[in-house]
Image (cartoon, rainbow, N blue to C red; front, side, top):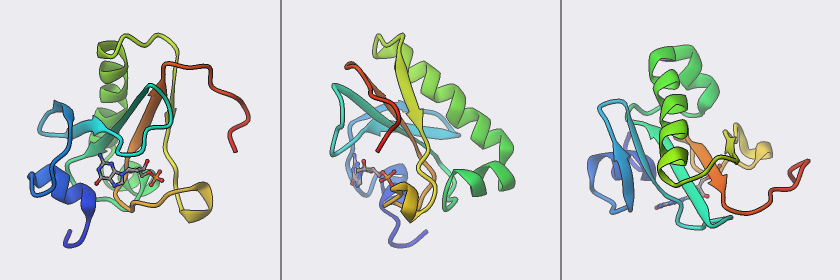
Length: 112
Ligand code: DGP
């Protein structure tokens, strides 16, 4: 998708600290980390948000979820939070589906 930052990370046109790459997903550290570990897991296909991904390509949605577990384990996390911000009012700012994997500190609830 032209002008999509995360598509550009998938293609390699924008650099990122990539921690996992498969045909289905790419995972990389967040530019603006909210915790000692903050990794983004994205599908290689462009979908606007997690809801669209789940509807249009459930297999790739499952791959994203499986990858969150993998990157969390590789980061040494047993307790962590997986977040899919869906829509601007929920805090989504990049409109390519992504999971945040956040951990390494105590996480409050409810989230803001
Ligand atoms: P969200 O607000 O849920 O759409 O999260 C988008 C996240 O993407 C936000 O935490 C910052 C991160 N981000 C935005 N642009 C870049 C980038 O170019 N590189 C990396 N590594 N992260 C980015």
